[in-house]
Amino acid sequence: MTTEETTIRATVRTLDGDEALVEVEQGGCGRCHEDGGCGGQQLTQLFCTGPKNYRVANPHGAQVGDQVTVAIAAGTVRRTANLAYGLPLTVTIVGAAIGTQINGDAGAMIGALFGLVAAIYFIRHRAQARGGNLAARPYIISRF
Figure 1: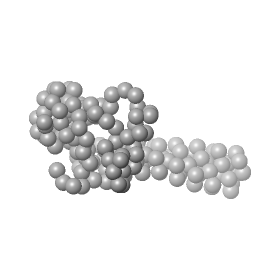
Figure 2 (figure 1 turned 120 degrees about the horizontal axis):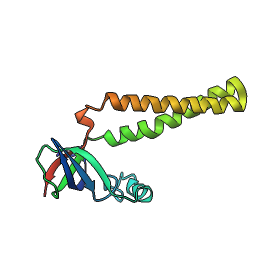
Figure 3 (figure 1 turned 180 degrees about the horizontal axis):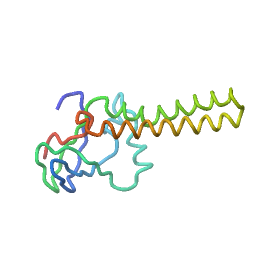
Figure 4 (figure 1 turned 180 degrees about the vertical axis):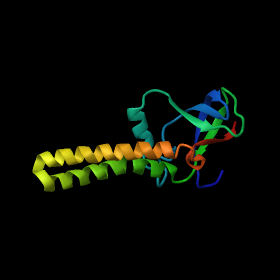
């Protein structure tokens, strides 16, 4: 593990080849109360009431029921959040601004909708194209 990884504790629930489905003990990176923490755990607790399960690489051969530490490369969570939240918001506002110039309020609504749909399409296309990017995927770094 390097200092650039974000880690979280989890329990292995099922196995699928070289991957495992893990259930995390908490939401976010666990740095909520530290300097530089974003407070994301409170948001996950607010909106996610069920178990949080994720598919991760299993290079250490963890078995069902094992307690593990899962890591993800530095910057991956930030880049993903920027893509998932920042891009649609920005493109929606730009679409509304352009639409306003073309046709007032009706144009703003159409432009905002067009921008939002375009952003969602772009994000889905990018996610499918980069699905095999192993550097951006979470993985098990240890069992305990």
